[in-house]
Image (cartoon, rainbow, N blue to C red):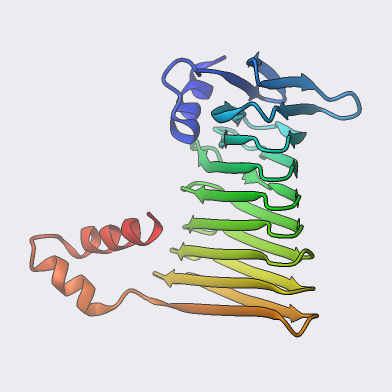
Length: 305
C-alpha cells in the first residue's frame, strides 16, 4: 500500500502498521491486503466487486477490519460487502473510509454493505469517514447500509464523519425481528461548502423489537445538512429518534424525523433540536483562558465525542 493509504488507515481504523486477526484493506478499487482467521472468513464476491465476510458463532469478542481508501483524483470506487453473522456470534467490525485528492477530478468511494445477523448475535460496527488533500476535485463518500436482524440479536452502529468530505449521501435501512435491538450513533461535521444527507428507515417487525437512533452534527461555514429518519412500528415495539445540530457561521440544517405506528402497542418518540452555541458557554470557557475560537472548538469537540 502507498503512504497516503497508511495515513488514512491510521485515522479511520487505528492502523499502527498491522491488524490482528481478520482484515481486508481496499485501496483505489483493489485489494491491498486480506487475511481470514479461524472464526472469520473473508472471500471475494462472485457477482460484484467486494467481499463476503462469514462470521462463525464461535467468534466471541473478535474484531474484523475492512477499511477502504481512495488516494487520488479520478477514482470512482464502488464495492459490495456482505456480512453473514451466525447465531450467537459476538463481533466488532471496523470499517473506516478515507478519500484523498490533490487533483481536479472527483474522488469517490461508495460502499454498499448488507448485514444478515443471526439469532442472539451481537455486532458492534464502527465507521469513521474523512476527506483529505488540497485538490479542487470533490471528495465523496456515499455509504449504503442494509441490515436484517434475526430474533434477539443486537447491533450497535457508531459512525463518524470527521472532516474534509465534500459531499456525502448516507442511506441506512433496517428490519428487526422479535426482540432485536438496534442502536445507532451518528456524528457529522461539515464545513465550507460541504453537504451531508442522512436517511434512515427502520422497520420494527418483530414483537418487542426496538431502535434507538441519535444523530449529532455540526454545520460550519456555508455547509448544508439534511437529516431524515423514518421509524415504522408494525407491532409491540419501542422506537426513539433524536437529531441534535449545532450551527456555526452560515451553516444550515434541515431535520425531518418521521414516525409510523401500525400497531396500538407501538411506542415511538422523536426529538429534534437545532441552534447555535450558547453565548454563556463561550464566556465560561474564555474565563479559563481560551480564545473565542478555542472555546467554540472545545464545545464542538465535546458535542461530537
